[in-house]
Amino acid sequence: MSTTQAVSLLTGGAGFIGAHVARELLQLGHRVIVLDDLSGGQRENLPDGVHFIQGSINDQRLVATLFEEHQFEYVYHLAAYAAEGLSHFIRRFNYENNLIGSINLINESVKHKVKCFVFTSSIAVYGKGQLPMKEDLTPQPEDPYGIAKLAVELDLKAAHEMFGLNYVIFRPHNVYGEFQNLGDKYRNVVGIFMNQLMQDKSLTIFGDGMQTRAFSYIGDVAPHIAGCVHLPVAYNQIINIGADTDYTVKDLAEAVCVAMGKAGKIQFLDARNEVMHAYSDHSKARQIFGENKQTTLQEGLEKMAQWAWAAGSRSSSDFGEIEITEKLPASWTTRS
Image (cartoon, rainbow, N blue to C red; front, side):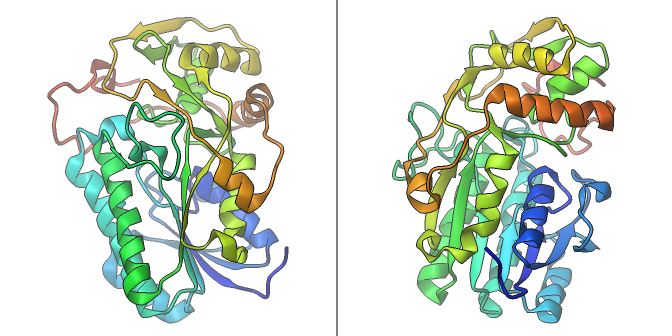
């Protein structure tokens, strides 16, 4: 589907999912302005053809200036620090970046009559014990990250009801693929495993590895995020998006070793406070976007493995703004 040079703001466009959405938007004919502070993304992830601005969604003055200069028709808000487990220990950072920064964007979108605000939320809003996770369930987030995401969802609903701002909310889950940050030891388990293998280290798993997740290849997710603004039926909807088949984390570790063509040893760490089982119902996504081929886990891992070997291993840096150290997992307090 082509468009007539829609002007779109993409926050977090140098990050993992954002880099793929940027490519999809260019293919749809959008003029894409990327705002990213490069705290988790990398400049080289960006495709040719986007206009890049280094800056933060927390910079209220910068955000207001960009909306005034470019008169965005669409806003794709992907910027976030998506580390559910770590969010317990970085509560202020979490809410400033994942909630207050989002409000800056929503305010300007209302003022400038943006046609649609696309927001990537998370299945973290559901909490535990609600399986399969379905959009009409009452959210019960277990961590500050999920709480922040839910708060933005509710604010978008309020902005729509008060000011008419249209939105599309996606709740993706366990997305992996090329451009994932291999040097972040706090999130993105597939990238962590691949990075550990390339460094000849053990693959570390919290608990017994029987946690289940439905790992979702980015190529099955990004096109829908980009194209949803051209589907009026998607407007003002909350949509789960991702893979249907769930695997244990232990199974994932073994599959990553196969995809990387390298044997690896698993090291089990003390269990952390996390939802044990998480997978979603995607009936609504199929109703809106139609049936689409889902990349198998092994096929997706092989694609990412080729990229990872080419990109090379990365040093895992420590998060520098830990606010609470009580009950912080030991593996997060040592360099790796």
